[in-house]
Amino acid sequence: MTGQLSLARRGERWAPAGVMHCGRVWACPVCAARVGQRRAEELAGAVSGWQAEGGTVLLVTYTVAHGPGDALDDLMGTVAKARRLMSGRCEWRALRAEVGWEGDVGNWEVTWGAWHGWHPHRHHLGFARPPRSWFGGREFICWWRRFEDLWASCVAAVSPQYRPGDGGRLGVGLRVDVVGEGQAESAAGYVMKDLAHGAAMEVARPEAKSSRAGRRSPWELLERAVDGWEQERDLWWEYSAAVKGRHRVQWSRGLRERLGVQVRTDEEIANDDGDADEVKGLDDDETALLLAVDEVTPYVCKAAERAGPDGAHAFMAMLLATLTSLERAELRLWAKARVDMAGKMTPTRRLDAGRDPPREGSTLWGSDPGDEHDKARARPPAMAVTARRLVRGTAMWAS
Image 1 (tube, rainbow, N blue to C red):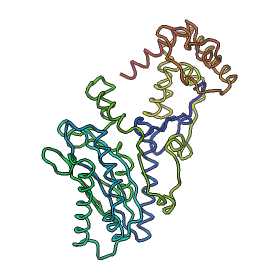
Image 2: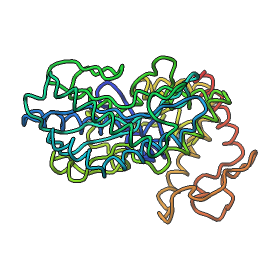
Image 3: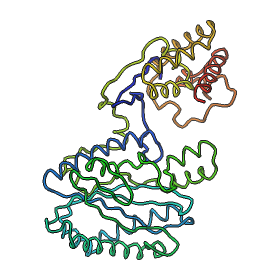
Image 4: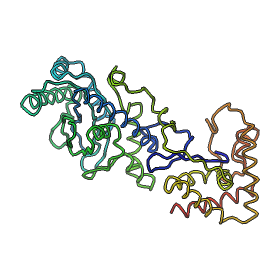
């Protein structure tokens, strides 16, 4: 960033606009929340539209027995393989035909607890058209039991040690709930407020739910890992390795088109600012000065997220008050030089792509002074002193 910062408001929340996001919904809490919100909205619209047409939506949760010594990758692999095996069985085709099952949307949710270890499970919203006689009676219970038996047999065929209900392990196996219009549904302790939206949130946004019964979400593990907890750090690395390459929200083939849901990748959603309620630019002198110091930029963004544009201005004024008049003058010259250099750079590659981090104590922030991108980041020694003073100010504010 050089010179200005744009903020986008969605509801009551402000966030930086025009910032490149990674789109890694498994490992990045910012992108997970951003993409998860859009996916939940997509699902809410799909559920509402399906119910308006007279269809029924089923919330199905798949899991396996698990204990404190089980590896997350093994558990997730068992669930995935058992579902693939189930999809090819004639019993599953018969169950689908009975309720007019036209497709589903699925997503992983993972938690960890000290008593029972990792607890991965998949939530699926199934779009079906069962006969009216199927509701509220024996037919639904019988269908569910047959579904449950099928799931247990598939899990046993893939990994017998993870059969639901095996001694010493926790695992409910499979649960089915009907998402009804205008009534609250509870599925295995999950709370859904508005049914269409709530069921969609259950599937699309596990990061929005707080942990229950002593279990922690991956984001809680990450937070504790950052704070220095070694066990949580190891658990986070195990989680990151286990989820790599897996889809977050997955639709049955053709269902998205059938329900009129736009096809967009996670990265496209993460970098889309077009749905903001309001966009406000901070292009004043204070912003231009402070954004010239790379280390300060995240704190300015955090202040904006906490208190909006007014909060960002107040934070920047506090930081500038810590500088002497000479340091302000140096900062002003440095900011102008960065803007001028940025206008001359050719977009040959991403800044820092494939580069090593700067050496400790280096006054030139780039290993190759001849590179135009590194020239735009290189700071004279006097400017480095000013930057350190600003960073100390941000650290005091963050604490």
